[in-house]
Length: 137
Image (cartoon, rainbow, N blue to C red; front, side, top):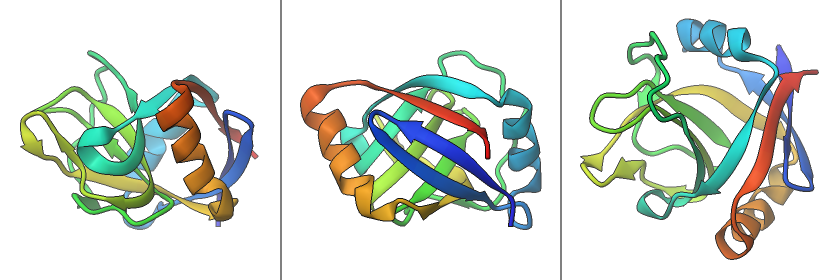
């Protein structure tokens, strides 16, 4: 199982790539490592935080996509109805935008640090944007 390290605000996590179910998305994201940005709360999608990617050209299509990520699932939305983004579910989530329901490629799953996810989500909700960094472990 290939993992990577995620640091979000004051928290650290390990996530496993979903290489069997989302090989193209995993390969594309590896090209971006190390990747650092800001996470903001995603009120449209429930208990989730997201990284807006503006006009980033992902070059991706849908694979292993879902509208209902589980806690600890990380989705890469390739764009279409809304801007490209990365979504991290910390609780109950239904991935959506102003245009309605969205489906993102489930390409990472948090495997260490799950007990910190809710606290991270609440920190982002009440304190605002936090730095997030993805890097090889």
